Image (tube, rainbow, N blue to C red):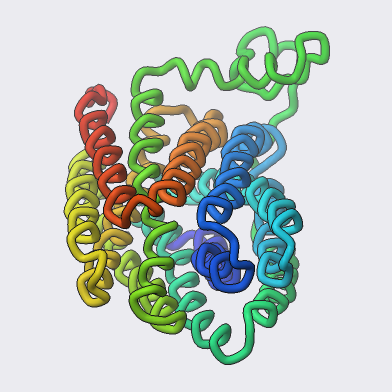
Length: 402
């Protein structure tokens, strides 16, 4: 756990969470307050870039395994300053373009960052290292959300956006200079291509880009446990996407923008505690029990949100529990990936799982934006159904590999 690479990575993720997540968190309220747009438009503007992030994660996984994890991560960090332009524009088209660029960068960041994480520590410490990885970003966004509510209330959305752009550019420079390079890239030789075509990122112009991409991912996707894991990632993240749309919007309606920022920060701080506890449990007992427990906690929190949608206090408490439970489940994912893939497949494993995450998040986020007009409880009930499906899938994993 004392890896220098890990601690530098965590510091970078703290900075990224600090500057970028508050804008994504408050985006639905920004669209409603500043632009006067219908909520389904806000959902669509966020859903499309998230889908692009999932596709870019596939390419990022290939980039990690071929050209190295640091380069992929640096490209992903660019999203930290790009997203700042969202709060500086009143044009839906400009916002869509910015969010699409940020979505592509997020896929690169996710695949590059998690692959870098897996390569920085031993398997025996991966649970705690994963907790530290996610904890860093969440603690950063906890601080950022708490401060964002105050700054936006005192100044403006635009002022906060320009501050994000400047700070994000500085973070990219720090990442380039401070983060050590991991020696993972391999060159493609004729012998290697003949003997193990699935282990390299091959570019065969005669067969086409998509065929090449499929050839490299097919050995991973075809494994039963990986396919089940992708299903778990999709359905559990569908609920998280719904929650991420609903929580800041409903809390802002029950209270104000400052309380909403504090609510987001408090949720993230609690998630930090849950991450650390879950990481330690994973290292001691394995990954399956924490994953099952996290599902039931998500279900309980969604039920709490459903029955307290008109109470600021009840919604505050249930929302905090929802964030902690969702991030606890995320803590188990890198360990699952390491168990179900070889070392030279790590990047592609992360990329495939991020595609499932993106598909789930964009679906949940957009569906919630459509259904909220029918009642606040309707999208929460849909989220509960989705988590129930995910909970059922986890019992179908072949435990001989765990």
